[in-house]
Amino acid sequence: MASDSGAKTGEIVTRFAPSPTGFLHIGGARTALFNWLYARHHGGKALLRIEDTDRKRSTQEAIDAILDGLDWLGLDYDEAPLFQSHRSDRHAEVAEKLLEAGHAYRCYATPEELEEMRAAQRAAKQPLRYDGRWRDRDPADAPVDAPYVIRLKTATQGEATIADRVQGHVTVRNEEIDDYIILRADGTPTYMLAAVVDDHDMGVTHIIRGDDHLNNAFRQLPIYEAMSQIEGGGEHPVYAHIPLIHGSDSAKLSKRHGALGVDAYRDEMGILPEALFNYLLRLGWGHGDREEFTRDDAIAAFDLNGVGKSASRFDLKKLENLNGYYIRECEDDRLVQIVAPLIGDMVDQELLAQAMPVLKLRAKNINDLVEGAAFLFKQRPLEMTEKAAKLLDEDARKRLATISMRLAAEKNWTIDALEVTTKAIAEELEVGLGKLAQPMRAALTGTTTSPGIFDVLVLLGRDEALARIDAQAATAG
Image (cartoon, rainbow, N blue to C red):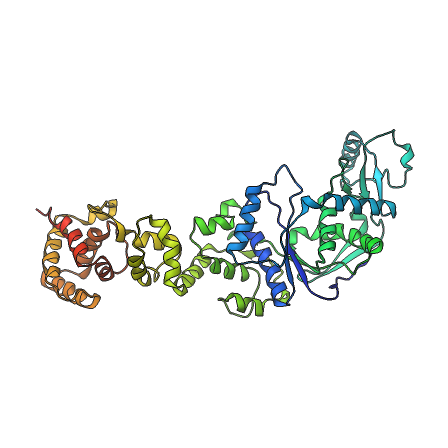
């Protein structure tokens, strides 16, 4: 069975088809992105299908997480999500049609018989495949009312070839594909049947998915061809099997490499959606040396010829650096709306907005912004970190008393004026600026890290800044 991959005529249609058995995996998010971009680039349709036929493992919580993650990434779809579980009657209908047309047959083999078959194959060191024992047998030979499954009748000779848009021409001998089950004894469809029927009915022209599904493509081809004969339709979809994502150690991405779910990158790691969008875009796809892409730029540039054949490596530091770029590019008001709820209910958003241009200069994630802004809203007496407390020895507290007195006389509470005054104090005391700035930072923020010390003074304001310094200077011996 030779088959050349080609698009159906007319509009390009892609689909993302996650199984709702957990969160939206980072690999799934990239697959969703590539499908969405390809459809948008070609002016086609991007569709979403929830493959929830595994009722034991599929949950509403997982469905909500997937939809939420896609929405957060800005991936919108042209139709309402299609739920595979709602189409079981249609899947069974196609199975019966395939049976009637001779493309499938009833198999009455019992679980015990199949296990004996597999045991014999193991003993003979043969591949574990169904041996076709009911392929040409008369169903009348089966016991009355015996349960049966419906198996697809696959080709036993020749070979099948797929012209994959990423992997190139891939060929498999037909004898390697056994007569697999398409409808279980309880009348429910298997994944192979349901996926093909849904793709057929949705008019999908391009299937872009991980290369771990490449073998599935060869198992699904016979269903496409049989459906084309019994229901009409064009060729099977164009396939593009993209390499999987690996960790920095070249092993398949797993929990030990860090967060896997899109929600964790948003909620725990403080990544902006545009940063993850951009990073996933460049994870296995290239467009010259360019790194940063807006959504519109990505739509204009994306095509499958830019997808590489090799597995891509997930680099968390690169993602964080890219996220830092997008934080600096982000509007301050938007960052305030993200950060304020994470600090607390009583946050002065106007003050936070004033601080944001300074806070975002060094931030690589939202958590950095939250931590960097925390000092603004602390109440006296400040709780000190262990490192900050060590900076406030007796000499440091004496210097703070001098600093407080001199800054209290400062008429211009501006960054430039405060810097000039503080440097003058350092020269008079014959110490480096750091000997003043470090205890000042501890007294003003309770930590050893913050925006520039003169930015901190201005953001806190004269009264609050002096009160914090005095609270530590007052205990000098």
